Length: 164
Image (cartoon, rainbow, N blue to C red; front, side):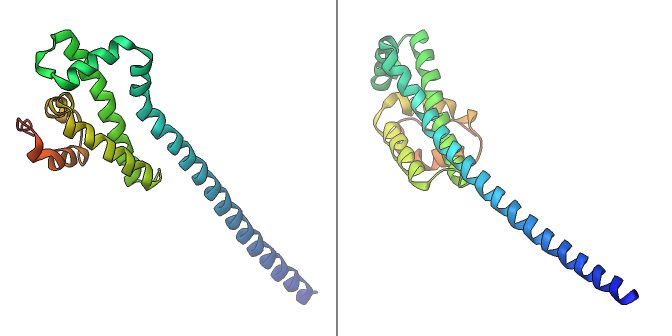
């Protein structure tokens, strides 16, 4: 009787161990599926955030004109126009920063960040409004993005960036 009880105990232990292994495998599969879903959502969110300021320009002809003026002559626009542009540029830089951090976290495909980074750099390099904005609002961004912007464009601005 004692031998039979020990056999049943061993069988129960083995069944328990198998159940634990199956549970761990199932949990790993669930985590993998959730990770894919979160990455997919992040991939959707990143371009959506980046496109919002562009959609605003398409939908609002007045804003498009204002930003066009700021892009070319940021020092010659009235204060109210400059404020509208600063808010617009802030949204653009926020989306750039977001993509950089999501790339660092491997939340979005590298290619998405490379494209956004290249496009954002070209705006800063070619449009005086972006250059002025970057220099004025730099302190609104935290590290490492702030240093990235400063290092990337240190020699390319007509005026030095503000003190850190």
